[in-house]
Each structure stands twice: as C-alpha cells, then as structure tokens.
Image (cartoon, rainbow, N blue to C red; front, side, top):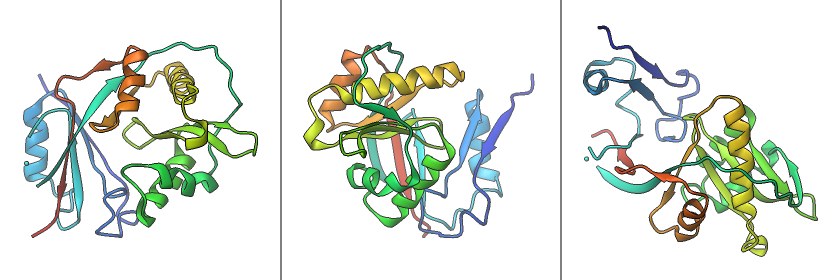
Length: 209
C-alpha cells in the first residue's frame, strides 16, 4: 500500500527573509512516520540555510520548548460585547500580548494570518478588541488573549467557543497549544473539557551552522 505524504510551504518569494521563522514554515503530513523522516533527510524543497522551527507532538533535539496541546469542542450561548472579525490593523495589538511574538516579524505574520484565516474578537465599549482568537497556517487556534482590564469575565472562554463552532461548521479539526507557565489558559482548557495530547507540543529552533 502506498502511503501518501503532503508537504505544504510558502512560495520562495514569501520566504525571502532567512531569519523569519514565522513565515519560513513547512508542514509535512503522512500516516507513515518513516515518510516524514525520509522527507526531512532527502527533500530538496526545505531550505536548510534558513532559520526554521520544527514542531511535533512527539519528543524528537537545538533550542527546545514544550507546551501543552489541547483539542477543543465546546458549546456556549453566552453573548458578551459585540462579536466581530479581526482587522489587519489589529495586528499590533495582538502582537503586543502574544507570548511568542512581540517583534516586527511576528507582527507581519499575525497580519497575514488575519487576512487569510477565520478570526474572531469581542469589541469593547471603545470599539476595539477586548478579547480575540486567531488561526495560523497549520490550522491551529493561536494568539488568543484578553486585555488586562477585561480579564476575569470569561471572555476568552466565550471566544474559544465561538471560534470552535465556526471551524467545526467548516469541517476543520480544532486544536490549540499553550505554554507550560500559562496556568490561566490551562485552567480554561480544563473547564471547557479539552482533551490533552499525551506527548504535548514540541518545538525546536534550528539555525544553520
């Protein structure tokens, strides 16, 4: 039986910055682990001269970061604030509160994600996002946050529920990861009956020699 392998990556024009690991991403999908290993060893598609990240749900080694992975399926009818989609002009706000961002490259990455994928936010009284949820090129819900002055009211829980329902209607599997130190999101995930993946979420930052 032939086991198919799928490799997704941006165009070479988009991956012009060798140090932009937000953009320089490759997704390898296969039911056969050996296919993935062979692709990494022999593929002439991956530019190993660039800074890149390897992400996996298996411990494999490089600067290492471990996070918890949660799968999400919740129902919520609670209406809070004004539900809206994100705008590219909101990228700076998201970047400010994203644990893995806070730089120019991450802000450009966030803006591209807002333009390309389903996003949701709750607009506060000022008409700006009070809480938000985004999606990246891997299909993962990421970069969600709530402004400090609105925390403690369940906004992020509601945000995740809305985003989940929308993706579920599109037939997109829903998952997310959170940093080991982010106890708040871990508690939210537990309260919303997320299913934790045993091996977690692993990331290795690779730099060419």
